[in-house]
Length: 453
Image 1 (cartoon, rainbow, N blue to C red):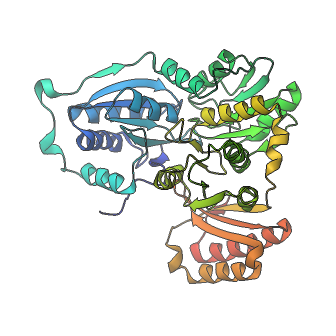
Image 2 (image 1 turned 60 degrees about the vertical axis):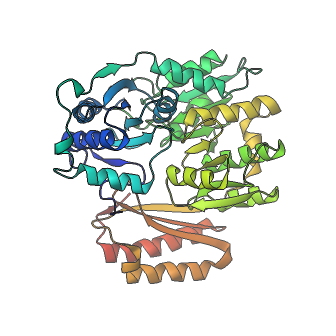
Image 3 (image 1 turned 45 degrees about the vertical axis):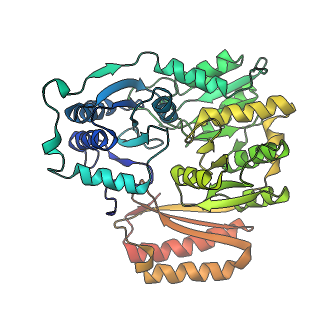
């Protein structure tokens, strides 16, 4: 199978109305999806709250209908909502128009199969072949075979019911005050509704989308806003989602940030204690903190690492029979309840543990002591396989040799942005910063880095 050109670690992504995120490409994606999953099928199409969603939604639907597929529009809805609805509504596939945590000017396209799982690399490569000029011209639908489009008005309600079913029917959130930051994104109505219907007093922020303010100094990428609101209001905890609500970051009752690694640690230990953790291991990525690995080892649970990207986590979970996995960034996968990262499913599992144990989040989060981690992102002028960069390779090997067993070095290109990510982890954060600086200096000289972020 040919190498993917457009699909990255999480679909196709880029600046809206600039290749590859143009209506022309979206139309070709729609045609390819219809051809691959069945030209007479039904495809769900959802989006987040970006202005460019209208542009791409229409083009994508045109491509689907041109091949004879029917389109079900569901409007703004979290990415995991499409994964759930594709399966529950027996759709042929589900497509989400979203750039997740990126600024509003970007957009993206993510695709789920009928079973609610993201597509493997070989299927994405096949879709790209079908998108080639002329590949599907002979197969366009004609006459009565042209597809139709409907709007599904109760999609959000169906997803809300699904979320609530992941919380014990014998429990509620009465007496709890919860701050939820929806990043002016796809969960701006759904997340507060779920928590309120379960009995919580909800203080909602980031719930006024205008098409331009998604992720704008709110949400999971700016948890300091959530933290300040929790301290100001005296809430029991805070929940910050990103623009498409497939990731979540928490604030405990004191305003301390609790990331995905800490949530994996506490949930894994809880599941293990109740003999409900399957596969004997938790699946996380190479970015997950060494502190997570040590916390799990204390109770005899292993940690399996994958490349960055929640779909790689899910693939490894399914292969090994594991039911818990995720990323430090807040993509958390509870496969007993969801087929992909779901911020609200994760939040409800944390709330379940809090209710069952009577413990505040600050106490639960103590099961993991993070190792200092320094991460720097360099905006690169060009991308090249790391093995073709001899100076950078030598710098990385030297850093690994210097740290030995006391730390880790990870250098990789982002799968969704034109950036080189350099991460160093060791007990001494000052030393980690020095190592990062040395590697970045070499990378800047060899790659012609445009700037630092």
